[in-house]
Amino acid sequence: MKQTLFLLLTATLLTSGCSLMQRSQNSGYSDTSHVERSSDEGAQEKNLSQKTILRHLENSLSTQKEVEQYSKVLPWFKNDKEKIEFLKLPGFEARQQWLQDNDFSSRAQEVTDSLKDLVEAQDIAVGMPEALVKKSWGDPDTVEASGNPQFHNFRWHYNRYVSTPDGYKKERKVVYFEGGKVVGWEVE
Picture (spheres, one colour):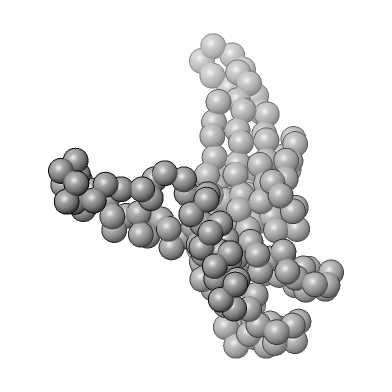
């Protein structure tokens, strides 16, 4: 346990680079903005550590059945902390019980109901699952996976012609997904 914690802390420090290095307040070179930044840096470090733990747990899923179970419910987790709690459980059956105890079957319906108006208006929103983006904008022209595609980290590319006062113009849209949910998009 101590060795794992040490490895996680080492990885966190190596990936965060020099941003964690600060001058001592007694050095004569520090400024007051250092004090204001320190709480933000602590939050960033905690978030980075959570991401590292999450990636480790995702990669430790041992069977195809476990990977499929996780990938099917991935869009319905509220946050990384909840994903970590789920993945730390010992095996498929314990995780299945956790899903039932946390009423995951109703989460999908709640999200769908709350985003129904956006889909009808052919719009999307942050947090929208892949299936609703398809209902709203249709199938993407191309899909790019980032990392393991079973964890639903994708970029969907749309190329459409839209009517303008000057005729039709090609519009490009890129939708970014993490864990099967929209985290952002660009329109070119």
